[in-house]
Picture 1 (cartoon, one colour):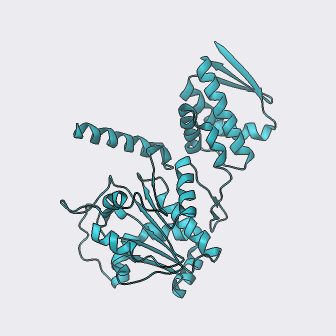
Picture 2 (cartoon, one colour):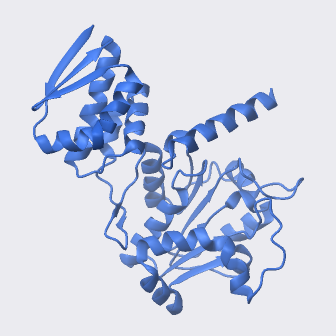
Picture 3 (cartoon, helix red, strand yellow):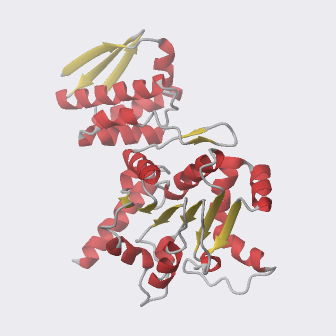
Length: 320
């Protein structure tokens, strides 16, 4: 049996690292089949040599995140474990430095994975960015955070969020109320993200002034959008004609972010997705970048990653 011992600078680090009832350390022990013992400021790892080295690298990276004030939870522990297994843990230290904006509750919003960091950097450095990937990768949430950050810094005058009003396999029938009431259910995820960033009162104030607009995609036709941060969500449910119409709304001083998941297309059978087409059409155009997320970038419950993997495997077997 191989053994390695190293020291921790401060006891508070050990308390955060181990978590309630040692749940964090138990997770690392289970993943690498090692035993981890803490005595005072010393941590001892026992097991197979390769797994001991990996467990040590995971702990060192978690201690770095703790020193940077990051909260340690199951999601980021599992992500660090995945990065160590892939040999990419040297890139993890770039994550803790990027704070996009502060939420209404004072929480700093940062990219949590390397895929998210690449996405954030792409939005900062390009006029149009297309973010494609599975549910739970933070595509919409991070785009809204960057929009709020640009609005607060007076880089843009307006935030415009839109999505196509396509039902996800359900027939909702005739909804009651005026036009806004009818489209609100489709736009609810966008409202939720804005409430989180700004708080309901600030959101209401900016919406009344016209600084924030949340509207279905059909409202975009015929407009030119200058000095705006524009986000098209659920873009997999656009037709090619709608996508072309939306992208040609771009005005001076504006940014566009298009997000979607090409595995969750809700269009009627036989209709092509505008998102699938636009990725191919614009792939060689300057100042437009496409970022693809994987299941490793999922920041929801671990089961979401497992569900996405299972569906991907099933779809691949069907194609064969």
